[in-house]
Image (tube, one colour):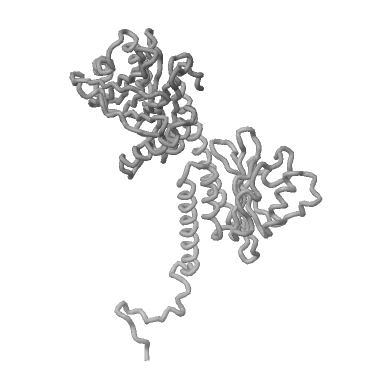
Length: 462
């Protein structure tokens, strides 16, 4: 009998003889190639996520190595050239956590110039290179070569791939991947994958360094716009500025302090909306404009801010800012210092007595500048006890994401109370360290300390 046919007229089969498709290809080999391609793509995606998860170079490289282990390698090492051209081993990670630990194999490496080490050749742009033989490091006169082979020996390398890290036509360092198990040796087939990985690592390192350089430049620009504090005034003054750690942008936070012709001292703190060069330039111009208004004639702080608001509306329409203007004067040598102040949409100043009592000065409040030039700008006055400290600050000190503002203000009061008798420089340093958290916004603060009873001129504060 002839075999039973299906609807298409072809005899049925159970697949046992279907080892090849009609074009002669083996479907099992095709499936393996597809799986290898998917595995490679997954590895590259995971590596990219590890590198992009942070802008800290050493942390990102450690996450990368842990991503590559054990799928691609039993251990992973990354060496980078520093700003002085010296090769530094940033990270070594092993599938067995007990074999190595942070710092054990890491640190500054011997000079690469003239060395026969694989890392030295990679720095010249050679690679990626597959290594299958590892000489003993004991008899080598080449320090880098000896150090490299010592690592291979300690990690029981059976095969390794050494690849240069290239970005923008420069070699930034070396990526080394090793296998300790003969049954899972690295082969020539892995070179193209490692080369792709090395390129991604180099780009991530280069981007992180560019970001750090931009952040450093932005911080230097920001600090250059801030004024020098008076060292010969009647009161001790200290200030601090901390840029947002997650940003490479300049901002509009500023502080100022100067002595008026009649001997009164002025303290100012402000915050212009925005984090860009325009905000920074506007901050500098506004600070200088406020200085001119304050020195032009002695008026109550509320009127000073009203004049600033009127000028600001003409020069920078639709741009808002907050500000505290504080004026300290002493009518008689036996009387306490008197504070006159006005607050335009800014966090309230904090008064801290020598005994650790704290309170926010909530008078003299009005809306931020840039909203309504006709709004009334009230002022308030408070007598400041001897040895007390007045702190002006921007909202970056007390505002954290996903936290109620009251908690930040309470944290500020708690830290300030504990620091009431510390030197003013220590007071400012510890406030920034203990209160400012997250680094999501710039922080500026300025503090002034009242002299003790019958005290002489204050000592200059850096």
